[in-house]
Image (tube, rainbow, N blue to C red):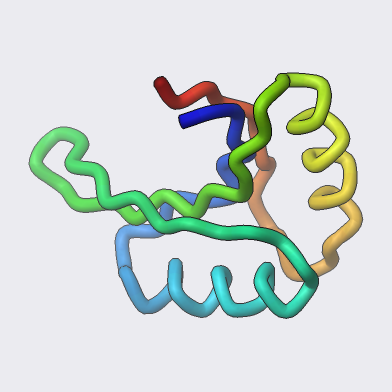
Length: 79
């Protein structure tokens, strides 16, 4: 529960795990959430949670400085 930054959602769990390791090495709290969209599995790589949106916005700005992130992260609220 809370505010997360979704960094990526690869179709391969191994890609999600690889990105997760890099993020953790950079000091971020990471979870991987399995999702099924149109009968395909995706592995959402989420950084967080934060209690307030403002904190997740700051985290997003920090993530944008990480050179290994090749997607555009975005903020999402998980209830």
